[in-house]
Image (cartoon, rainbow, N blue to C red; front, side, top):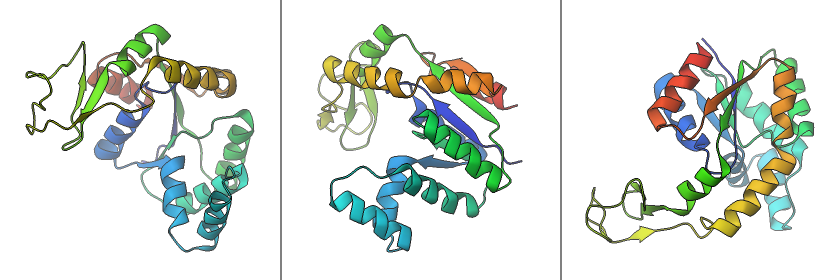
Length: 214
C-alpha cells in the first residue's frame, strides 16, 4: 500500500527522526529538499546541472527546480513518500498538489508535530552529539554517565551544533511561523491535517503517527 505524507513542524520538532523510522519500518522514501539538491548537484543530469549553476551563483533554487526534482523521484515509484522540509509556503503547497494530481497520486496525510516553544528551546539548546558514533545526548534528560565521554563508544568528541543556541533557534522559529505555519490552516481546510504531540517520547510520537496513517 502506497502512502504519501507531509511532516510539518518547527525546527527541532523531530521530523527527521520520525521520517527515518517510517523509512525503516514501512520502506517509504524520505524526500528531504536539502538532500535532493545536494544529490542533484553531483548527478550530472540536466536538472542537476541547473541546480549546480544556481548554487554556484549563490542564488536560491527556484520552486520550479525543486518540483522538477520531486517529479523525478515520484517517477521512480516505491511504497510512498515522506515530504520533509517541503512545502514551506502556500505557493509550494499548490505546486505539489498539482504535481500529485498530474502524476495520478494523492496526499494521504499531513502530520503536524505540535510543540511548545519554550519546551522546544530547552530541548534544542541542551542537546549534543558524539562526533564519533552519532549518539544524541541532552544536558537535562540524557546526560552522559561520565562527563565528556560518550556512553556508547567512549569517545570524548562531543559536539553541539553551532545553531543550537537560543537566539538562533528563536530566529528559525519566527521564520517558520511567518512562512510555513499558514500551511496548517491550508491542509486543515483540505481535511488532511492530523496533529501529534511532537514533544512526547520518540516511540509515542511514532505510535500517534502510525494511528493517523492507519
